[in-house]
Image 1 (cartoon, one colour):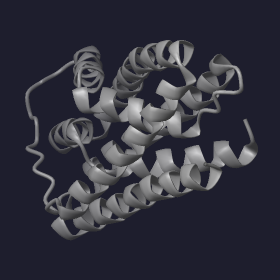
Image 2 (cartoon, helix red, strand yellow):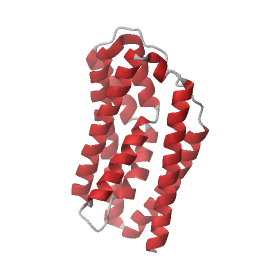
Image 3 (tube, helix red, strand yellow):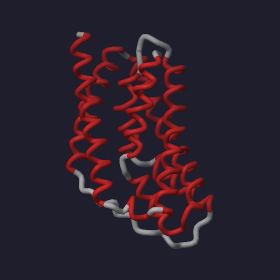
Image 4 (cartoon, helix red, strand yellow):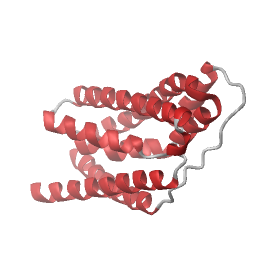
Length: 208
């Protein structure tokens, strides 16, 4: 793996993690209702959930790569198309983040478990990892070292992202509840997803 590949993966992951989804909605809901104390357990829960979803996805990717290099290339093409579709969907999404404050008394362990379940069992997350990760994997190199680096990078970024969202929601509620802010985030992320998908297709065509 080259440094450029890792930097590209890191940049793409950081942008994509900022885009609001079911997990961020849950994190913000807890933070709005119970303050900054929710930040750490939610961040740990999301990181564990992402680890679970990523592990399941990678088992599938490993099986595909072991079965056929051609099939793995086809999966990359399908993944690129999915990224473009997801980007268009995000661009057209509304700006409101409909997060209702959760005021019910909840222990840190229960919050952690809730975050883990929502993140790990989100089918969109599994689909995303299957579409996203192959774009950065070189089938000519050993799979496990690449996966290890990418997984560690993504989980660290996911932890930091949730921690940031929770702290901002507990301290500056108007920011995460601003439709304008969310619209900018969605459209920026959507544009980058579309660009990433198109760039991947162009790279494949150039190599072919």
